[in-house]
Image 1 (spheres, rainbow, N blue to C red):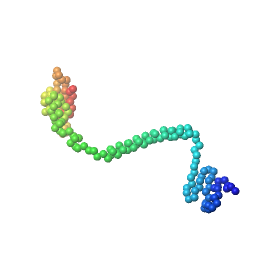
Image 2: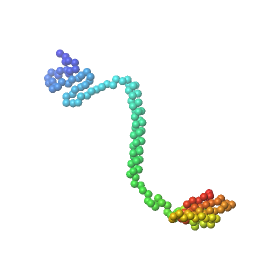
Image 3: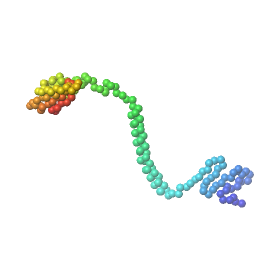
Image 4: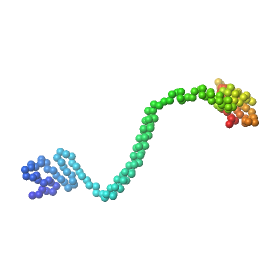
Length: 172
């Protein structure tokens, strides 16, 4: 007599029957004793449609990958910036006063007046002014030196605050 459908065949003569019969069902679910059940499903789809589906999925994942890479790069830059220990010595950040004085002396010798010069350097560059005006406001002394027009220069004015040039007009 044949076993009913879905049941395993009887054991051959001389082999004891298993404690629990192994059954194979029509839906391809297999029961194994003391093991996890395995279900096999077949995707019924034409090959060309499967390829198109996989290509679309791959293309859709590219922008997400780019976004993740950009976020990673930004995070790396932020961490590097926050943990940077590069510090410049103070001597390289500020120019020494000797260089500034030398530059101002060179400008005065060339006949130019620039901000930061002293009144003596202005006198050396342009000479005495044709007119001066002085005003004191609290602890601040403001002088306006006016130089008359000459054949070589238009009218020029120099503003000195506490003896240092703060503005020059009429200079090219």
